[in-house]
Image 1 (tube, rainbow, N blue to C red):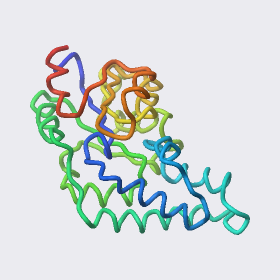
Image 2 (tube, helix red, strand yellow):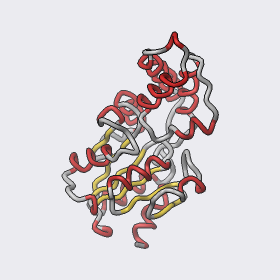
Image 3 (cartoon, helix red, strand yellow):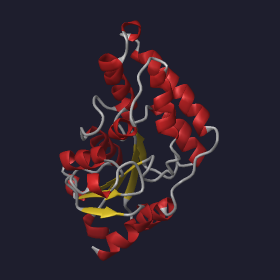
Image 4 (spheres, rainbow, N blue to C red):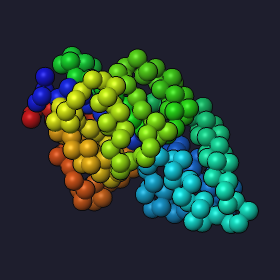
Amino acid sequence: MTHGLRLMVFDMAGTTVEDGGQVGVAFGAALAECGIALTDEQLANVRGASKREAIADLVARHAGPAWHGRADDVYASFVRHLEHEFAAGVKPLPGAEAAFAYLRGRGIKIALTTGFDRDIAGLLLDALHWKTRADAWFCGDDVPRGRPAPYLIFRAMEATGVDSVHAVGTLGDTVLDLQAGYNAGVRLNIGTLSGAHGRDKMQREPHAHLIASVAELPRLLDAL
């Protein structure tokens, strides 16, 4: 097995799934309904986080009195907008499925994680036909706290029977992904530049490697 790895934990949108901006559009539209307007930078800062947690925080801090205590309504609106966006189609990032096949061929387990709740993630995985490609998948509502907490990674380890963080690698496109990998203490905490955050942000976070996209993962592991 490559460098003692037994499990590779992937983020979804922006890491293995093409990010067509659907999440940002849906997030912004839902928040606009309660009078919250976010800049592109503010939207980027919640990428990789639990969307339910992020909405609850933003509503509590920025919404008018009429919306206090109604974060669940805003989240429901986000889900409706996102379903509409996903209906136009979603695609894997080039090289994602080849990377999965590479890992499979070496006996390395595959887990998918996301800040989406399970209902949204299920729609996305069904559209991609990926539920059988992964050994496990975990979502924002499966854990007590989303990234940068390490719990999504730990749940993936539990589900795949991997006991040691030294046998785990992670790949994600946001600073929260890298922070979660660091907080979990994984063997290989890898960032990809294919999604939400560019090199300037990613290189400031703890990481083992930065790659252009998931397509480079097999070559990186071979080089190591």
